[in-house]
Image (cartoon, rainbow, N blue to C red):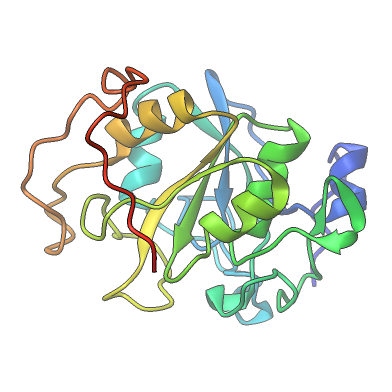
Length: 219
């Protein structure tokens, strides 16, 4: 296993948030990216030693859309290996600990992304969800977790746990940031036939605070 953490903040070294740091500082807003999203020229492992040396030749659609809108990849965050888990305990690079209590876990499988936002290292991070992998760690770490409807956001370039279920999404400091990012990453992608043709709304404008008529479903 490579040691790629020479310049990490002390809080990350303690909590094991990142697997790989981007050695090239970008211009714009830093964003943490779950390490199952392909990033051109930057190692992508899916938290498995099987991919320890894998450096993609292209980036996931959502990563490219963010980079085209003033964001840059600060680092690749820890997760359950291949997204198989709900606690980030199954990572071949060790578990991510909870920023609020290091004797506890950060949740998973997007635990590293949730912890990166919770510590304040970044304000926003990419995660992916099959059945709770964004919303779970968001609640464990006390941040906002947004799992979009399947097909709203392209899966192209994402190492999937279940391609008929996976939804790339967002972990952030607040709802406004999540709405802003969703507008950027949502929409039709010619490389993903499952993406919806529906027009991308201005989700940020929809945050009026008025919830009259909203239905809440309880399982």
